[in-house]
Length: 248
Image (cartoon, rainbow, N blue to C red; front, side, top):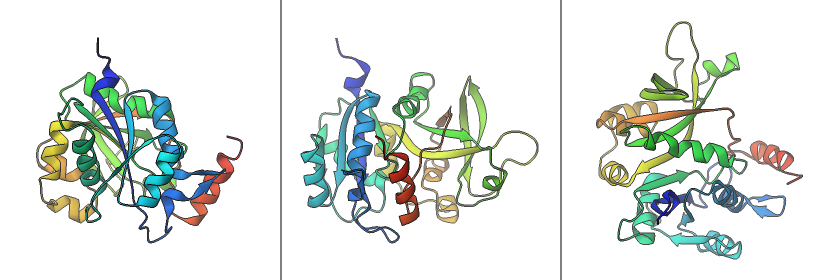
C-alpha cells in the first residue's frame, strides 16, 4: 500500500546568482555545501522524495555527489516557485505526487519537524497551499519590514487561515503577531495554477509572491511552529550558520 510520502515531492530550488552572497548554495558549512545540508534535513523529515532544482551544473554535481537527486531547470525563471514546478514536471511527469513541497535552499538548520508541520494543514482542510509561521517574541521584529507577518483567523489548534501577508505591523491591537517562514506545501493543481498567473497588484506592492495566490482566491493555511530557522542571505548570516552547525 502506498504511504503518504509516496505522494509528496520535496523540491529545493537553488541558483548561483545572489547579489549579497554569490555562490550561496555551495557555501561551505562545516565541510558540507549549504544546499546539501538543506537536502539532508529534508530527507530526515521523511515526508517524500527529495530533489534539488537548479540551473547550475556545479550545484548539480555537488548535490549528486552527496547522494541526492538534482534536476536541471531553465535559467530564466522569475521565481523559485516556477523552478520548483518545472522540476516537479520532470521528476513526476505522470502527476503521481499530489503535494509539492518547496523548501528554500538557504535554511541549512531547518528542523525536520518544521518541514513535517508545513504539510500538515493540507490533511486537515481544503487549503490549496500550506506554510508555517512563528509567534513574534522580539518587539523590534514587529515593526521590521524585513520580517513578513501573516494575518490570519484561527482554523484549529495551532493553525491559521491566512487572510493577508504584509511587511507592515499587523494586525493592529492586542494579540500575537506571527513571523511567516517561506516554506510552502502546494497541492500540485494549485502550483500549476499559480505559475500560470501574472504577478498581482499587491504582490508587486509588498514584494511578496504568496499574495498572488490570495488575490486569485486560493486558500493558504498556516501551521504555527516553535522557532524560526536561520536564513542565510549575507556573509554575517553565513558565519552564524557556521557557528550554530559547527558541532554537527
